Amino acid sequence: MTQPAEPIVVLLVEDDAGDELMTREALDEHKFANTLHVVRDGEQALSFLFRRDPYPDAPRPDLILLDLNLPRYDGREVLARIKADPELRHIPVVVLTASAAEEDLLRSYRLHANAYITKPVDFPQFAEVIRRIDNFFLHIVRLPRGS
Image 1: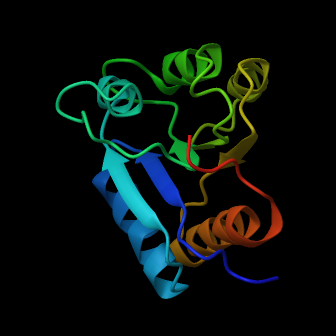
Image 2: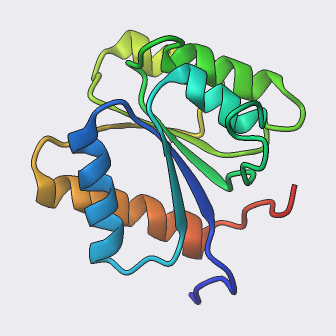
């Protein structure tokens, strides 16, 4: 397994500053060379993805890490909009949420999430989850690029 020639672009949709910090630290700790963009709510996520103001030059993410419980549009609505759009639906979306509710799990998969992960509460376990997600998408699977 070799690292891709260029880093992947990851969009983190996360309203909790602590979870954002843990994600950044986990990525830094494992020295992954990907580019992380962060938006704080569902409306910002859709603006980023559809390249609307203030993100007209936003890169197309190779991977989206999506929290479900967001202000404005929640993660379920964001996921539905991503998977309904022919320009975006190919982007893998990993739901990374505090919710362990079976209803959220089923609904996310019905909306075509690529994975559903309940966030661990302590940093070592959280960092390990981020490391595994990153390793999987950087080294194991092939992602569509340049769209």
